[in-house]
Length: 196
Image (cartoon, rainbow, N blue to C red; front, top):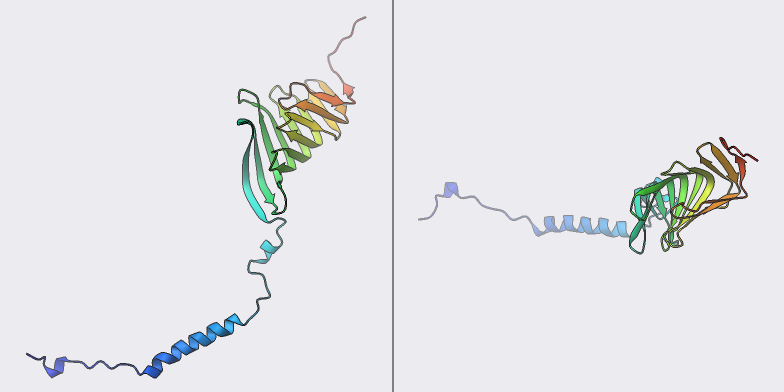
C-alpha cells in the first residue's frame, strides 16, 4: 500500500552551484592567508624579553657524588641557556649533608650558578653559610665542588664562632666543614685568657 499523497514530502536537492560557492570562498581565504609574511613574534612581548632559553620555577636539585647525596639545591628561579652547560639561579638555598645523610650546613645567597656536568656551584651576593654547630661564614662569593669535596672563597670572608669574629681574604674547607682555614685571618677573640 502506497502512502497517502498528503503525508509525503518532496526533498529538494540544492543546486550544485550553491555547494561550490562556500568551498571556493574557503579555499580563497586559505590561499590569501598563506601569502602573508608574519612580522611580529608568535609569543607575547614578555617571552621575547626573557633572559634565557628556558626558565624554571621552584628549582630543586640533588647533588650526588658516587651515588651519595651531598647537597640539596633549592632556588626560586633557574635560567637555562641552550648553548651553555650551566643554570643561572636566583634566591638560592643549598643544604649540605654529612656522611650519615644529616644536614651539616645551610647556605643562602641572592644568586648562583650550577655547572650541570660537574654539579659544582658558585653562590654570589650576600652569601651566608651556617653550620650545624653554629659557625657562620659570610662572604660575597662561595664555591662548592662536590667532586673535589671542597668549599672555598677568594672574597673577603667573615667567620663567626661563639664570641670569636675572624675576618680574612677568603677561606677553604673540605665539603663537610671539618677542616676550615681562613686566609690571612685577623679579628678578635672574646673570653680567651693567656697566662705567662
